[in-house]
Length: 299
Image 1 (cartoon, rainbow, N blue to C red):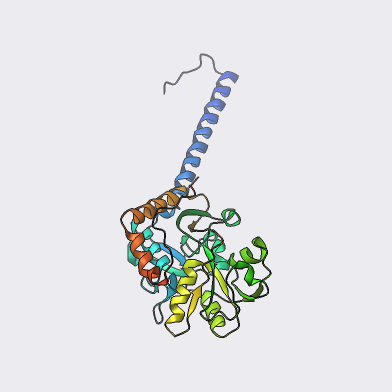
Image 2: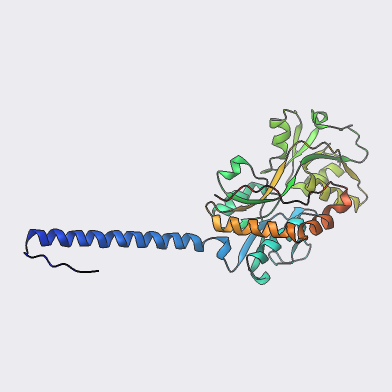
């Protein structure tokens, strides 16, 4: 920059100095803004060396803690969602030793993301307009469909959605499944609260529930679990919604969202998704989708 010296001192010089000070201040503010942007980028899950991932601990076939394992160890949880989480972490170049799984109940997921208790959530987390006001979503990585699970004997003769009227239906805090039946579909089912979907299954085996309605992947996992103890369940096969499973992340993390979407796309392209879906749900007879879902978009 060329410095110009005023020909006469006095008020004009003072104004010039004030102008220069103003320019320097503006540059300083711009620099501070740039630093703030860089800081926000550094907070992205795409730039982290370690990740804390919120998952379910009581959904057979999807996210379940292995009995006797450490509370947050990389190998202490198993299921389809856990495999998705591990593949995403690997794509983000995070070493397995720096990945921690943390139980994230349905009713606490948004809060855990907002407070930074977890970096992301992978756990049958359906994308809804209400949830999108609190957190952002990458994906979806799979589109499930809400259905109904009954005992094999089906003593209540539940064959379609309307048959749930007056029947005892499981309700899990934080889950949208019961609301979709009672409010969106206007079917007056009787809510029976449970701590989670494994608890729903236990209550149905004990005869305290007539049905469980949730995403077909969840129900398939429950049916497989029940069969191991001789308690046979079956899907009614009357789907009535699309459940877009997203990866919950902090609001505004565009870089993280795009990185996760790249990981999901790669899983479909290289056969990982087909392999994992068949591994966990092939025996249930569910019609599985192995094409990349339409993403939400990251901006």
